[in-house]
Length: 390
Ligand SMILES: [Zn+2]
Image 1 (cartoon, helix red, strand yellow):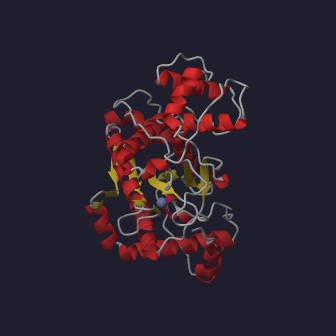
Image 2 (cartoon, protein in one colour):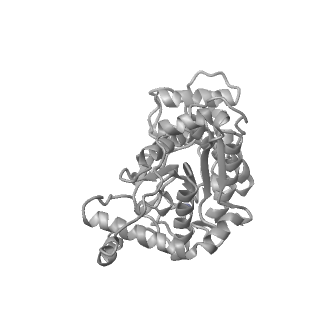
Image 3 (cartoon, helix red, strand yellow):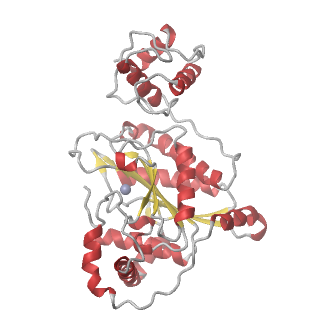
């Protein structure tokens, strides 16, 4: 469910804003050149890039759900793989907030012992931010609406930001699965694909966050589709309101990216049999994105192979040959859907057969040991029908 909360936040807090006089200056986020230089000399200086992986939600508040599929179970599986991959780079000092066993002892203790301090942290930051809005120092951004965080959830999310500030974390990666408000409980929604949220440009860690988000997004887009929700069209989206990425200026030392790895009702998430392979693959791509940001392009381990089975709801029978510039829109839409599901095409379902589709067909032919001609002839058609016609 989506709720507009920005205006409410501002208007209820204006009356107390005047009591704020001072907030201690926090550690500033490292710039990209600073991070690059630290990364390249980490082996000799021991000063590593500090990364925090946050699998979204938890066992108590599990985020969104579809049937028996819970977001928090997917995010923890993906987050743990991501943590393991990042740990293979000795220049990274990696922390994870939660595992399959729940929050790590460190975070469990932090939430308990720091509870009052976290509440104070929230109060002062929200008030100070409200003041900045009222005095025009900060412009309220017109962003995508999000679910309202329950108070207990807010304490954990802001608590993680406070912890990250105190521990000079450089990069935070939040792992999530998306949903949207206007679908009915049991129904498949109309949107699908990946998006990444980063802090609004007016927040301190914005430039590094945007670079991080783009690096991860570029890597994920090699084999996945971008979100088709219009508000997520940018792919990497700036946001002022998500607590996880520093709402009310609560993240000062760390750049952050919140990755929505798709929509909860998409078939790959519904199939429990492939969850491990799927989350491993997405985690690997995310890891590769982070490495790419630091200019590291060849490294172990090798990418795992994930076979995402076709959507059980998608079925199509091709009866005509297709090639660049030739074919009905319906046939080509189905072809592009099939190629996407086969993991060989990433240019969207657009209904015209252009160079990208031709490339996808060649990759499909290669995958199934068919001569790579780039057109859909009898052999390719037979393979497509074998896989996708029911
Ligand atoms: Zn979520």
